[in-house]
Image (cartoon, rainbow, N blue to C red):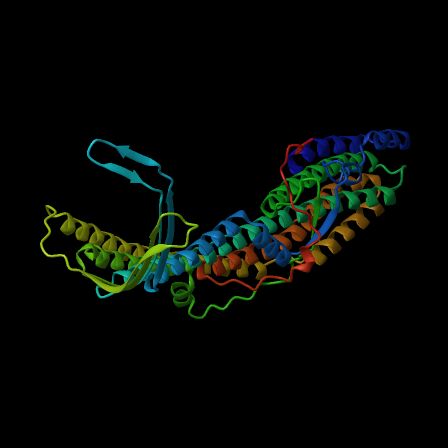
Length: 483
């Protein structure tokens, strides 16, 4: 955008230089017309009540893991399946049931006839029973239910790990995008500051005044646009971290010269053995096999053993103390063996469905392995390309020295030769800006490629310490949100 805006002004400035009509008064008028540099389109944080918080890349990852709704959802699902495993195992244990009942009838029934007389007094009754029983898993039905519950727990544990990897990569990508936009805004603001310094060194009476004022206006406009883009990129990061929109983040991780370490030995083997989604797919194969075995559980014999005891009381009233008592004790063994059942082939079809599900689970594992192998190969190439780019980076210090030499020649040149040096200064300034941003972008691209490779392999660095991000507030959307 800078080249498109500045080219017409560049021609106009050459015309002004060639005609020799530049004057000190004219330079002062143009200077007054150039607006001051705006470093951000967002209102001043002192006015909005926001604060600025330092945030490193490691702290951003730790904060995202603490606040992510996806991670919390996966963690709750794991807790639910932990309880389901305990319920499944509880079927092995004895079960106790007991109850107590009391009844009191207040009757005053009398009948007198020619032949006989009948009177029915009040009646009281009470009973208490207790039963203890436990199953004997002779058919392995309970065992398979426990196995299924345990598989579900392991699947949700792998899903939690997979979610944590996804959240980590999302926040790393968003942080690097915001950091790239911040570096571009800083570079454009340094360009504008460099032009201001050159204009001050040239002096108000210089014939270069009009040209430098035009370049300064364009540079300030570009810097303001870049700062707005940086604020927008930071908003995306704050959304992931659930940080209030009025807060500002100062990204402190300068990745220039920093390369994330990567171990390239046995990448594919590590990916196939560590990735949570592959482990989850393997567990689903085991789950499908168990479901195939469970298809005929309804035809398995069952045995249940237990003991019981009961006490009954009967009398006229609860308060008279004269009761008839009946006590029973005993044990039982309940054996249920299916003999002849006809279901029109329903059991056979259920087994076939379970067998098809198992075959599909095997195919899903193979498909996932092939896709992982392809993705890992492609990402290794991306890391290699990023490394080659870093090796061929221009030197920003040399570009700055070239710009300074071009500016010195321009300031020392007589008016008749300054016209030919103007373009050299502009080109040198653009080369300096490109060298600055290219270095930052190259290291950001390399580290982003390494982060993606680690995600594909299933590697995850340990989270940072918690206290460093404890002061950053959490966004809450309530009735007054946005007011």
